[in-house]
Structures are given as structure tokens and as C-alpha cells.
Amino acid sequence: DVQLQASGGGLVQAGGSLRLSCAASGLTVDDYAIGWFRQVPGKEREGVSCVSSDGSTYYADSVKGRFTVSRDNAKNTLYLQMNSLKPEDTAVYYCAATRRYTIVVNQHEYDYWGQGTLVTVSS
Image (cartoon, rainbow, N blue to C red):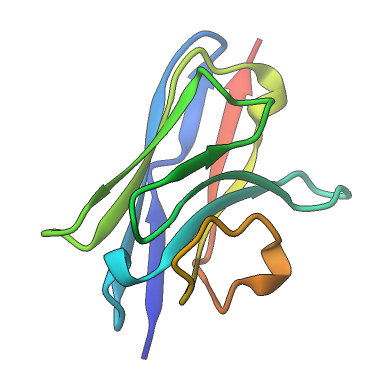
């Protein structure tokens, strides 16, 4: 079975940093496009970042320059380093995987989802 375990969320002050992890089992992360999404209650889930199997990366405009996605193939884990956090970054963050070689932005094209980790940024 494929499992994605997201972790690393927490409470941080505005301007602070957090690093989210997405540990995968049942798949090899460098064979998949891995995306990070976030959702605020009552709002649509939005794409934050993606890394394709060839290492290409994508960032939403709202996080560009502040967030960095990386992949550790040996640990079969993805990371989302989040710096200069803002209160509007507060959300539940999810990682997801799809067996595609390119960047995938559309959440409906993802096959596997982690359980989410809550990030709260206080002002």
C-alpha cells in the first residue's frame, strides 16, 4: 500500500520558518511528481509546490521566493522548507503523489494523498 506521511507542522510567529516532511512508503519518490497543497477550512485546496521526477520544481506565486521544495531519494522523503511565514500561510498542508514525469499542478490528477499537517502562523 502507498502511504504518504506529512509532518512538521506547528505554531510559528510571522517571519519564522518551518520544514514540512512527506515520508513515502509503497512508492519511490523520484518516480513520481510530488505536490504540496494547503487548505483553509471553508476554502478550496490550493497548490503550493511540486517537484517532478526529473527534479523540476513549481511554486505558486504566493510562496515563490519563500518556500523551497526538495527531495531526499535515499530517505524516500520530500521536504517543504517554509521561510518568512505569513499569517495567510496558515492552513493544513498536504503532500500528494502522482505517477507522472512532469510538474502536475491540478490536484485532481493526484492519486495518493497524505493526512495533512497543520501550520499556524501568528501575527
